[in-house]
Image 1 (cartoon, rainbow, N blue to C red):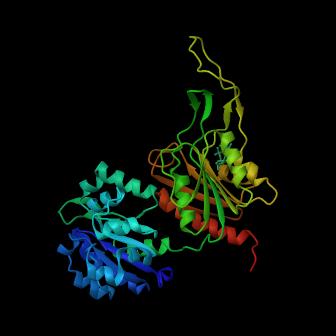
Image 2: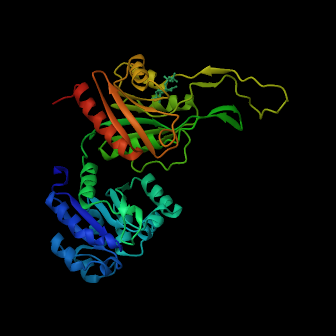
Image 3: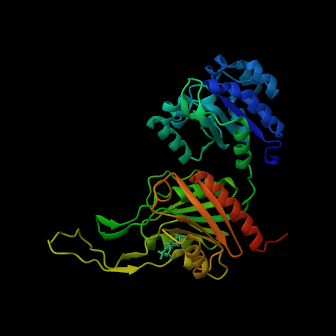
Length: 404
Ligand code: CTP
């Protein structure tokens, strides 16, 4: 928990029954060495009195955006700058909706908009409110923007129902905060990442593509950024918003992606290939829209260049990490690709089953390198990406000679 020592953490308490766990969260953060300031929404003060938070945090509690006394002591912009991390616990459905849409109608929401610090939200609400598409959409939008989410957990709820919606326990939130602040694992390193599918044109209106959503690659980019790396993300077409704080390069076909990678690879330290690059492209795409002619149609395909193999084969190649999607014999095929493409590491998952892999929010990863392997199990792509980045950092330090 040392990563929280001397960190400035702003805890925002929004108005739900789980606010009663807030004082324990503040105490545990302080036990971990953090300095804590508390901001409450007006509704939150109906559940727990500000005085309680003042006592456990050791600082005055902020509630009003337009309170002259509070603004004189530490204004909302100063508070936004002071924070190294902002934790919203509990995050109600209403509060998530407000910050997803950039509202600044009270001090708590304004702070989320005005801070450059990472944001960690711990949702807490009735299970149906949590499952509602509006809430799920808001949370997905926030996660795409790099907001971290801890929980909610399954279990009995204050309203008497049972399901997903309980706020994560204070200790879990402290652990999630500590994990976010393992900030230096890739500090000073440049990381180049490919993500998403490619589109191979048949004619000006048709193309060949695959089911990759880009979610895993975008999560890896955000995790590498949070570990302190300077990240360039080369992405095929996806529905995702580029992660904040990463250089973003859009590519369409496999040939485009190769060109973009070659333009950025020279000074990168680590290359992570998560993209589902087409293995074949149409030999001679038609210049005009092809007309149907009734008879069977044959398209001639030719192999694309393997971007990962090309990067790994460069003189002075970066530390290279590949991905392998397999439907069987995972370890054998993954280790085969590790050797065949001269990689430093490969992360492999089984595809073709419901619930993980392509298009899914969850994945199941195993990581292999020469002389070792680690099973990361099944989890959200965000959590797996953080675990993967931690292993990459460890292996990079072990394998690449560096000064000092
Ligand atoms: N890859 C790449 N460029 C390509 C094809 C693949 O950079 N033209 C990368 C992917 O990003 C991934 C890794 O290579 O990191 C593995 O790709 P995969 O398609 O699973 O393996 P292949 O070597 O193409 O083998 P196969 O299709 O036979 O499984």
